[in-house]
Length: 159
Image (tube, rainbow, N blue to C red; front, top):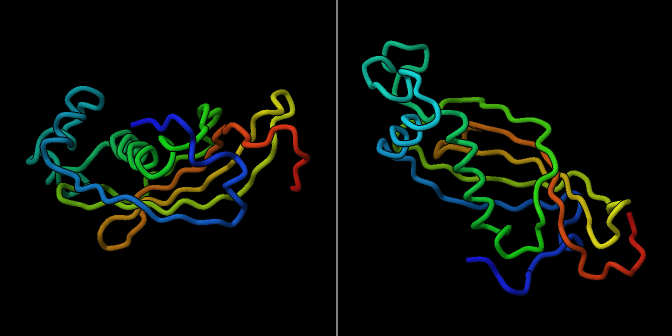
């Protein structure tokens, strides 16, 4: 549910701050459903074909992993924030397959922030995300910018 009064604004994200969150159990049904609609490759749809592939078993599409990350991000803080969107994703890397019954979690690190030159009521924050499986292996990384409303748009900002 989206918060009426945001809890988090641009000012709340400081360079170097980290947050760990999320617990997403990946099911066979979800993998098949997502792949059927968006990425119908055999190793995402057919268990026998997946076993014979380089992946060694049925696994989620990288785009499905990205979608699960986005959901965990929303649940952890975005839905309670003054976020106005993502102007860019600079990098996504799928490091390891995500298999049936994996349990995913996330580490977010704030790596850069600045105010918007064109919109003084807004600030931009650059985050690095690491997605882990239950063995604490990194399965995906993502780096990108998020635009947030500023709590005090008229105040000077320290870098």
